[in-house]
Image (cartoon, rainbow, N blue to C red; front, side):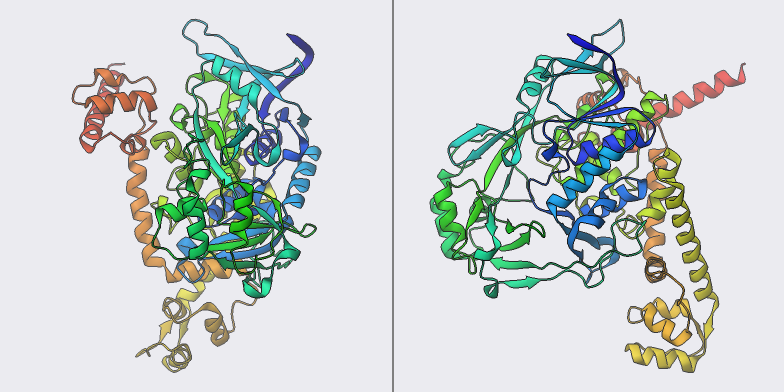
Length: 638
């Protein structure tokens, strides 16, 4: 091999999608020399599917990435063209920010950010092979370098594999297919082949994308306008406000005639015609899946989303398909408002290779290969946000592994990122995984508004979150606590309280009450309270939001914190790394096999493994108690 003297990096990241970018930035910002490889610069932070960041569950993850010192929240605040808070009519546990992105601008800002980052080398080149050092005695194999298609070799302390949907990618339109990554970019064919030669076992997942239509060919008078919020909430906690760009999206509907066309041509689509074998996403169905699975539905919602300020292309959300091009023309033009639609890019399905995430530890390190971390869609996830979160955590943990420090792992009770990674490495996934608020047991605590209060101190301790960010977070926390204390202490007369309650449409009180008691009522908001009190003028919007949520939902939040305390007791009971489950009497066979495969780090994680029963957990608890007793006995005899 053509080894080049001096071409060694602490960390090499393969792939510059959303996972790879976060991983490389985290590594470089933590002081490690980092090489980020991409086959084409145009692929950097590219959005091959929907041009948006955030959404239900996903918005919480972006806020957490930002709170820890990651880049995605900062970037979307600079590149959005519309922003909305989803589920704002419901409780704060499910409020989720979502922003339409100018996809070209998003890519350009990320590319510039990478280019200007100290310790980071961005390089266009195709990784053909990961170089492994074979077992030495009882040591595991170790990833120690990469070979490019040009023959160049670069050594690495740690490698992060973040190949997205490019590994073994194949695009399908009806019965025709070709080796390809998304949007016509080349697939990572060589790397796929060499990894298989090196013993990697892959599964094939698939996803799809709808057509893009030229805006001037759309009759918007027949569509329902969906504007953004007039006062958008920033994704990044370092921003007090963002520029209010508000480009509308549009709502339309399918119809029975369109459904009939699709149903009669199901066999001409790639999956129903038997041309694809990959497993598709459950929560992002193609139009052929919608028509087939829900035959009683007479219409389905679709959203028309602009892809940027300087392009005419509009993304047709909810209409992905692999029908032949001619049938796509007919189908899209059956939608009112799209009768004269000009398609600039046809829809397609794409299959790609991914790993079973059960092969990973909670730090996203490969269990059988030292020096190798995996992040993003190679781990079986879908979505830019899930990928970015994994990239951030892999980047942090790659650095910590080099420094001999323990892994940085977030619990399910601490973050949606913790839920995401724990689901992957504990339960695995048989389909492209998507985060949702329903996956989080403690979602009232894991809100989008308090991600900084939950995580910024941890980000600061890892070295990734800046001191400025940390000080802002501390100030927010103190101002919130001080104002809550003031509202609890400040009494208001019965006469004044009842006047306020009458204006709010709430029942009267029979004596003086604290301002906090008034705010706890559903009908009373902080603005109304401050008009009566004259306070709150100097408080920022985020602090006011915290005050109102923490007072209104105090009982529910306290109950959730009690649940978290019980949960964490099991999480703190650590399991030895080299425990011999086969030798433990009382464990069922399935439990022994699953525990040996997954190697849980705690009783809590063990309890979440499919096939491990409460009786099995009791056996483990007895075993741990015996181990503790033996340690104590040995300690007394010393």
